[in-house]
Each structure stands twice: as C-alpha cells, then as structure tokens.
Image (cartoon, rainbow, N blue to C red; front, side, top):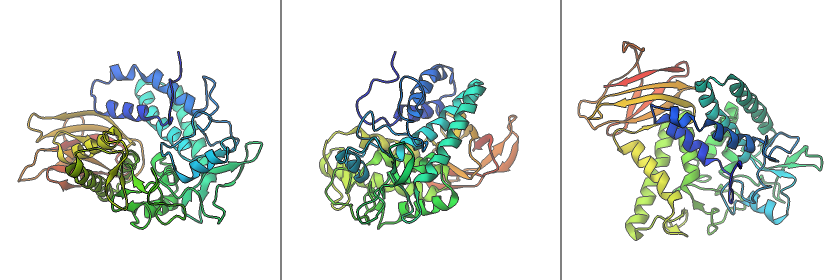
Length: 393
C-alpha cells in the first residue's frame, strides 16, 4: 500500500539489484512480474505519484532532502553537511538524486522494452533526456566537478554551492556521479575521469576517496571524509566497464581486495571503511557494505562461471558447460560506445577463443579480448555491436 517503508538514505539499491538478478537469470518471467512494483519505486523518486515532492525545483533537478538529511549515503560529505547545518534543504538540490533517477530509468527501460510496454519506454526516454539536460546546470567548469545547485525562492537555478573562498563544495565522489548516470559530454567525462584516476585527488592508496584529497575541506579523520567506502566504488567500477575502461576497473577492484585482505588478516573484521592515512579499517566491525562489494569483485575476476557487466547491457542468457570451459552469452547493448564484459572461465593453459555468432551458431567475427587474470576474459564489445551472441571456447 506504500511506495516504500523508509528510514535512511533513499538510494535505490533495490533497482540496481533488480538489474543484476535479471541479467543473471535466463527464466526472467518470475522477476519481470515485479516490474510494476519496481516502476512504482522509480516513479516516486522521479517525482510522480504517492505524494512525492522530489521534483519540486523549476531547474528540473530532483532532491530527496525532504525525506532524509542524507541523500548520498555519505553522512559527513561536506556539501551535505552544509545543507544540514544551514537548514538549506528547501533551496539546494544535490547531484546524486537526479543521477540515480536517470540511471534507474535506463535500467527499467530495458525491462519495459522486454515486456512490450511501449508507453513506459517513451516515458523513461523522456525522463532521461529531460534530466540529463537539467544536470548540465550543475556543471562547474572551473573545478571539473558537478556541484550542488542553489535555487532562488521560486525554485529557479541560481548558482553552484561554493565555500567562502569560492571553491566548489562538491569536489567529491558525488560530484562525479553523472558519469554513473551516463549523462556527461565527452569533455566532462575526460575531466571527471582525470579526478578519479589522480592519486592526489580521488584515487588514494586505499581506493577511491569520498572527498577529493586536494579540496580545502578534506580531512584525515572524518567518517566518510578521509576514508574509503566500497559501496560507491561498486557503482564506479560498473561504470568503468560501460566506458571500456577495463584497466582502471581492475585497478579499483584489485586495490579494494588488497586493502580488505590486509585488514582481515590483521583483525578478522570487515569494518565499514578504510582510512586513507593509516590503511586500517574503522567503525562497525561486521559491515556488509564492505564485504558485499568485495565478494562481487572476487567473483568477477577469480571465480569461474561469473559474468560481470556495466549498467548498459541486457543479458538475455548465460550458458556455461559443466567444466566452465565453454560459454555462450546473448546480449543487447543500450549504448553506442565500446564497453567491456568480464567472463571468468576455468584456467586453461592453451587459452581461449572468443567470437560473435548468429542465432544458428555460425561465426560472424572474432571478438577482441584480453586475459585480465588467469581464466578471466575482458571482452570488448565495439560501439557498433548493439546485440549478438558471444561464444567462448
């Protein structure tokens, strides 16, 4: 009877899990039966139905600050703390809320198309285009990050939230989230990627810092600020697969696995976060938000029978043989760019061949790939290849 039963940050992790489940299940009918409920959740976040007020700004950006002070999950994120401390939620829109609406619209569009719901597909496309355009108002060319957008009393966009010194207050992981939404220009992508890969900014020795280490408001002993948390790294890792950034995706996962192992070997605890300065874990000692992404990354690169993709792929079917030395995978790609897919096979001395085939199993062309770890193939899907069948043997 309710859109949701809620306390805490309204990040739609359920919808991302829904996509993971759909992509890893060949018999999808029982999962697609939940589409209407997933769609209702989306509609609330998009600002339609059930009394939602998330779309109240004339700028078109959405906000969940009316429901909880924490829109990103990052409790002491500097711009979010500013909004709370100055009671400014009525006039400031974050970046992440709009980004999640865009990305989950793209996810549900795939399911709606599969179900033949043409009207829903058109609504998602309209939302994606409208919100992507709205996000452009939050781009800060000076810093190369997207910023919190301050509005006037009429709800019109006014300016980007800055410190007293004029610095963008959102030089943070949230400031790169339009990458995850797939809502950036190529120039914006290049600048955001540069921040992500820079060891002096976001890519610390412990992983992706929640706050740019070069920002004036970065501290070494905060809760999220000064620490690495793995959940948002999962979103970024998936996005790197969408963008064809297989090398960096592996660096993200490998660094996370190494720092996790280091702490577990020392303490046998799975803490909430890893401190950038010390490399040690902290806060609650049995935190699934740290161990769940680790399990995903370990499976992606080291467990035969695993398939991992970005957000822009619909996987129709995955079929391994009993020894995981052969695989057939049918896909549809919802982007016009080169992406990569990870397929973990049994380790085999003689290596593997990968090709695109038609519905009859006839080889159309060879697929480019590299063996990222022993047995795990990082396969490139070129921009012009929108659908097909991959055969690995």
